[in-house]
Length: 347
Length: 254
Ligand SMILES: Nc1ncnc2c1ncn2[C@@H]1O[C@H](COP(=O)(O)OP(=O)(O)O)[C@@H](O)[C@H]1O
Ligand SMILES: [Mg+2]
Image (cartoon, rainbow over all chains, first blue to last red; front, side, top):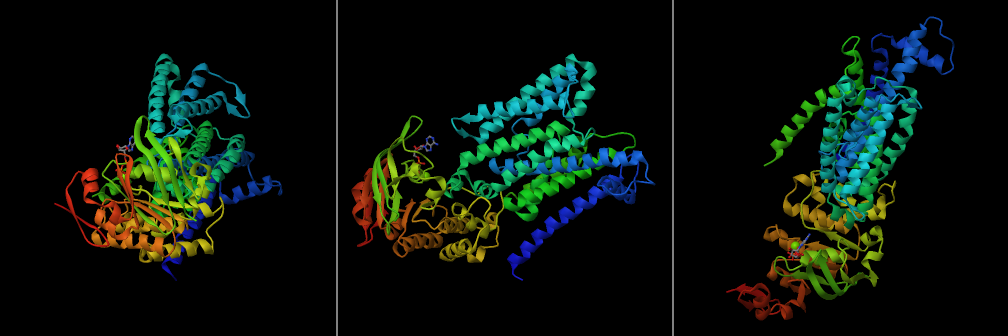
């Protein structure tokens, strides 16, 4: 076997391994939680829900927990994790910087700002199963992205540095505004802080439906630019020389990826590190070819966030840890380790 | 095919006038060396030719058609370019980098076919980079990387090849190899090869034409021995030289 075939096989192994691990862990995850439900019962419940026989020996509450609580939550966590990792990889490509994350365009602070206003107003409206807070978070995220984009735009060109700077400025502005609102509304601080730490606490099939189509379409759109991302990370001028319309590519990616990021925060709040760590780690394992990196990142992100969310809801009895805390607790040290390693590679 | 015409080209960065009234014609089979001191506008001229920069006035035409009027992909099928500057913090194998040269030939969801692998193979052979194919682009030497980037450009199978200071950081052996390759591409493959260079004697030895620049203007164009005179070296570089050599001038500073 040639070295090349060997490497290909090795890389395919990672795809299969990740997909298998994801499926296996999803099954395990359904059985976990405040009530342990054996896998056999889970199978029966799912089978009957799909039109099989009635459930003689299964408690209705268990059926409810599996079908209406755990399964949508598992789907959602996996999907959000996958999307975060894919957009992390895409942002890293267009900024040509492996340290970029899904929130570079200000999605997180914009969403937090919207959610804070929603919380303070106590806006109880809901829309296809979404709280007013989620809706305002979504709106806040998109408006912030639009402002950052406008600030960084020169004619039809967008500069990476411009985006990073505008993002930092908007972040600082909005964070201060949020702090001020919290100070003036002491009683709501808890709720706001919890929201910003991210959670899949209230997941439902409505959330899954809301995010599934954009997640799929958006990820495919990004994947269709994979070859252009490869060229782009070699240098913008080089990429243009190879035939890439660099400005269009950057514009398209910023818009698609930021929309996706806004969708994710609207269902789960802010979840850090997944979009940063997963593509980074996988790039070290399989290289930078985005045709492979993007799909593998989706699987890796889905697995990581599902694991973290399962921990979030089962580590401490009768208490839910915000999943953002867990991703940061796992992701932070891990990332420091990568940085250490990187430092050693430098001269 | 592969004729380049630069017609009354002026270029400004904001207000700074960098290229003034550039008039040039470059033809297939020529290996053109652009010479001139630092800041004389060599890089800016190359970027105007490949469409990274748009002329403030005048135009650049490739096979009679203005560069801006080509779509990005169509231009990349005619003109390949290796800019100066390093490789980013992303890891690719040499072979993957060379295959990137096929971008313009492939559709959105299309993967590389036999033709593409063959083009990459030819490019690696011409540049002597076959042995590096599974190495990481981050882990090869400066000379090797330059050859890999040239291979990527050659995989585009264009008529025109532009190189910005392709030999500046290389040792003498690799300098010779790359310039010999450029000459071969022009003479044997009929390409139009344009490179900005600093080494006057190397340029004189390998190039068929020299474009000598000073402060954004072309001072002289033509065969090395007609362009590279004592007076011009004094004028352009502000140094006194002796010109030796018969067919190929050899410039020796005094
Ligand atoms: N991005 C830029 N903005 C403004 N001036 C520039 C820029 N790039 C180059 N210049 C100026 O244009 C002139 C020509 O530069 P350049 O084309 O890089 O010269 P060369 O490649 O011959 O060294 C120099 O005076 C340089 O300072
Ligand atoms: Mg230069």
